[in-house]
Image 1 (cartoon, rainbow, N blue to C red):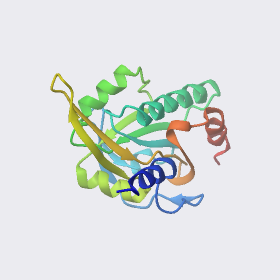
Image 2: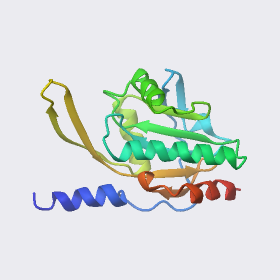
Image 3: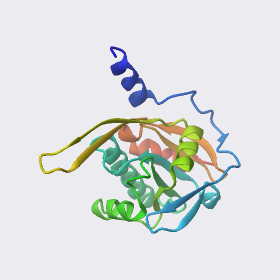
Image 4: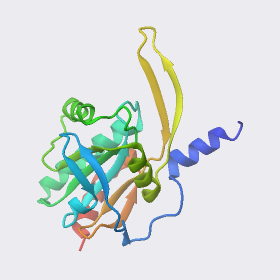
Length: 193
């Protein structure tokens, strides 16, 4: 148990597994997911032809996920100001039991997310787990408790990772989602071939 804080720090700050190589393909496997509007999405195939910024969240997250979501919104705004019109922003929930499409829609609404090129996705557990393994993202359930009103409070210890993926579904750059450098990310978008 004395090594648990070290494990948490490693997962939280660095992710897990090897670092992706520039131009690492997402692969040929598609993952059937549902958007915040309950539309079926075949990820990543449905986004081929446009670059995308991809991250993983859960809507009950009290710290890292709201920062990641907000940073994606800032990149969206700056990209628009820079004249970058062809890009998608994708946040995938690793909590599919709770994060149903209507919850994701509510999450987008509460955060005033411009949904014109921004999708929040969920799916069945096995699909989400397979996608997370492919992207080397880890989410470990933490303690669950109840408030004095009986509301459930639950946590995940999870990887803080975002990816810039080009129009050919190649992973080009990795970032810490909660510490995203907005200007650098927009520059990276402009530099995509």
